[in-house]
Structures are given as C-alpha cells and as structure tokens.
Image (tube, rainbow, N blue to C red):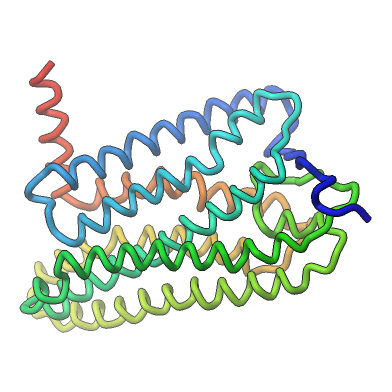
Length: 310
C-alpha cells in the first residue's frame, strides 16, 4: 500500500473515448460554457445597473448568477482541456480543489435558493411588512451566511480526504473529480468519509430544502386563498421560475450523492452530474428571463442601449 503522496495525478476517462464523439462534446460543452457565462453575466449586469430591478428578489438572483458562473467554471475548462489532450489527467491537488470548490458553491447555491424562497414568502404572505423583513442588511447577511455554510460544508468533507491512501488504481471513470468517484479508488477504509458525506448532505442539503419547502407550503396556501384569479396567476408566475430551478438542482444532486456508489450506475451518474453542474447553470438565467417580464424588459433596454452606442 502506498500513501497518497505517491499518487500525484488521476486519469479521467471522460464521457467518451470515440474521437468523433469527443469533437462533438468539445463543441457542445464549449457552447454551453460560453452561453452560461454570457447569460449569467447579463443577469448580474442588468440587476446591478437597472433601477427597476433594485429589490431583494433580483439581489438574490444576481448572486445566484455569480454562483452559477463559479459552478460551471470549476469543471468545464478542465473537461474541455482533457477532451483535446491525449493524457486526460488531473493532479491530486487539482482534484481536491475541484471537490472543495464544488461543495462550496453547491452549498452556497442551495442556501441562496432558500433565501429566495423566504423572499417570496415575505412578498406574498406578508406584503405589508415586506420592506421591513427584507432590508438590505438582512439580504446581505443571508448571502454571507450562504457562503459561510458552503465553506463549512466543503471543510467538513475535505478534511477526511487527507487521511486517504491510494494504491495503484488512479483511473477515474468520470469527467471531473467528485467525492464518490475518489472514494471508490481508495484502498483504505472509507466508511468515515461516506458517513460524513451522507450526514453533511442531510444536514446542509435537507435543512435548506426543508426551509424552502415550508416557505412554499405557506406561499401556495396563501395564493389559493386569494379571491382574484389574476392575483393568483401573478403570484404563481413570480414563483414558478424559482420552483423549476430548485427542482432541477435538488433532484439531480440528491440522486448523485445520496444513492449507493455502483458501477452499474456509472453512466447515469455522469448524466446527472452534467445536468446539475453544467446544464443547470446555463438554464437558470434562461428560465428566469423567460418567466420574468421585468428581466426581459431590462435586458431589452440594456442591449438596446448597447446598439445605440454603436
């Protein structure tokens, strides 16, 4: 048995070994990455510059867009690099960095989504006290807390990795370093790592999900009590995009990290990993843009100004 210092890098098998398929994947993921950067940057820009979007909902949305840029940037550049390289490797330090940063931004995202659910709860269930409840300082504290929770979540899962030992197998059947894939390569006992992972997912993930769920139970209950059909439609419209984003992220992430690690699920693992770490960051700004007229008008106004300046 050799300790982890001997294993200096891991080989990532990626999504396919077929050269033609790899060319397709390179163009596909490059396009997705560029669209992700453009879409989320546009959301961040208009929510910061347009006076009509200076409210808590769009404040949280701008931070969600920043998280999505970070999320995509952790894995996609290395994925694109390995597609064009013959030696599809990642260093041990780079692998740990991917795991830590992924946990950091993933946890920050779920708590920002929970903060957005609380914002919708305050706006729909207690509109008279909305400005008091969602003060600027409170919104900033919620975002800071989300990043603090992300740091704690990544730290809790990263520290046990330092005790792992690896033998000769350094081939990872994945396109990026994810904790379940790394643990599967260890030749020492990983029960502690799995227990810590499961408990941390339940504590951090389930607590944020439960907070979001309770908020929406109250929101839906309040909406159903509205007498005006138009009022119910508008209320549901403001919440629908957030619900779609929450569903896309939670379903895939919980499936990837809570289910048992098995070779029979390896291709399904890759698909779900691509869905929540690459596709969801691209889809989020599209979902909010399509479902929110304020965002549509702000984007049209902003790009209209850009064309005028030219």
